[in-house]
Image (cartoon, rainbow, N blue to C red; front, side):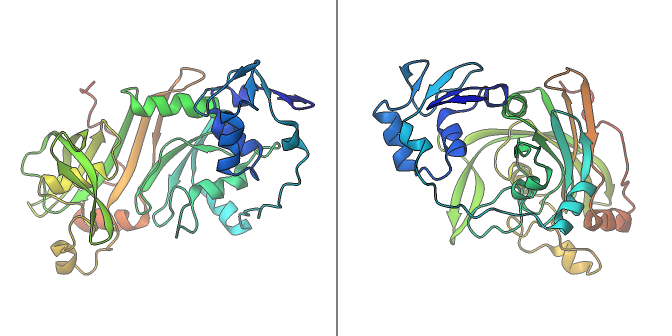
Amino acid sequence: MSEQNNIIEIGELEDGQRLDRWLKKKFPHLSFGDAQKILRTGQLRIDGKRAKGDARLALGQSVRLPPQLFFEDAPLKKQKRVSEKDADMLKTLILFEDAHLIAINKPAGIASQGGSKVGKNIDDMMLAMADKTGHKPHLVHRLDKDTTGVMLLAKNPKVARVLGDMFKSRDMRKYYWAITAPAPEIYEGKIKSSLAKVKEGGTERVRAVDSEDGKMALTYYTVIETAGRDVALVAFWPRTGRMHQIRVHAAEMSCPLLGDFKYEPAQPLLAENPDLPDALHLHARRLIFSHPVTGKKIDITAPVGPEMKKTLKYFGFPADSKADPFEDLE
């Protein structure tokens, strides 16, 4: 990116970014209201033309900004820092890395990104992996705070956009392992329903609803192994990416996930087996996709975390199976 007076030329790393998000990153002191006013009044121009906040920037475009943006004294923004301990821990989580993307094995108890009442999170921790220009890897998708497993991040916005599109399409095979209690009555199949967020007692949950109020969600599943009818190790492949999709679909099949107190507060198996960890037994096991730049097939598998590993051992379930349970599905 090059700058001359109040004109900025869009570089490769900014290609494809939304204008409003780019503006916020470029000028973090700029309030939302002021940014909207600049856009609304035409003070910002792309190649000499007015632009809306949702416009996508393209390589080589010239963005003209109000001169005062470059001369205003921006208030000092509190810089987030990553402790040396967390930075070292983050390095141990890396499953795959190249010049374009990085995959980590997210542990339980760490949120994907920040928010109200959210402490440590992967998005902030990625500051420890920022390049020389200060650009850190971008979140491509999210995992629930208590879900473990493969998490993919992109090293520039263009790759992030391509990977994001792959997650929304059928170009990404995303497998999860879960322990259900009891085992599903039918050992393989699919669950399809419309899901919507609801407020229950001040807590946000997701429920299966009629098609008018929810969004369609489709999940394939297959039982890997059982210990009688009480418990099973199940592989899930969510074809859509709705909030809590696997957790809700498992509960909808009357085989909720072990340790999922949000959708099955009783958890009788944990009550009967006090040696089992009361963690959520949901693990993002594997991602299979074509590299967004090289086109090479990428196949990343994440070892299960310590809590789930203990439960697998307790029931004699495999912890290192490399089989593809959905190999025959397109």
